Amino acid sequence: MILDILYIGQGKLELKDFELLEHANIIIKNVNDAISGLIELKYKQPKLVLLNMDLIKINAFDCLKIIRQNPQYYHIKIGMISHIENFTQIENAFNYGADYFLITPITAQTLLKILDNINYQAFFKDFENVLNRYNFS
Image 1 (cartoon, rainbow, N blue to C red):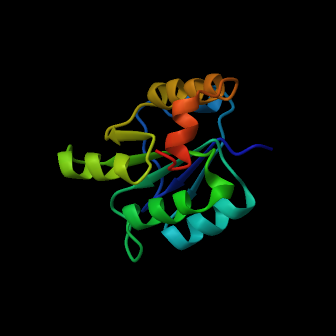
Image 2: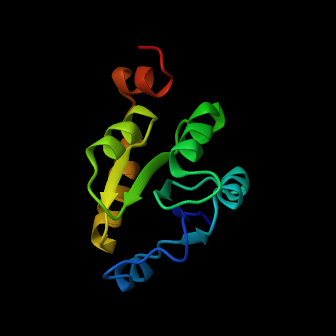
Image 3: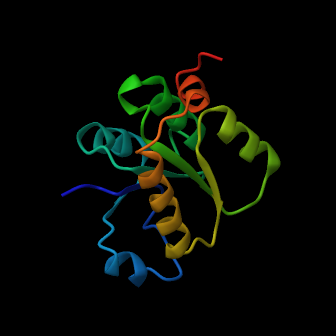
């Protein structure tokens, strides 16, 4: 069984139309803290990691940095989730290596589009993306 989405945040990932994911057989694993999320990431490499900005102990930016520093996880797409649209948070998220920044409420349809995009990108590697991911620029 392939894990599609790993959600690292307090409680469950709340979506408006969750049943769409169930019908598409999308598997989501919820973990409540960054340490548990990093352990889960080690054993099950999902297509997408969603980090909630409300993480405690290790904040979402530190967790993002830890993931991006490990070459084993370069291929994994990471989305940040926030309840507020804060330019500084968005800028920092992309500077630290996030691929997506989502503002709640999030719909299952949005996540399906992201997963479709990830599946499409898996077939193509462009030079600029590789340079950016490996910090050669």
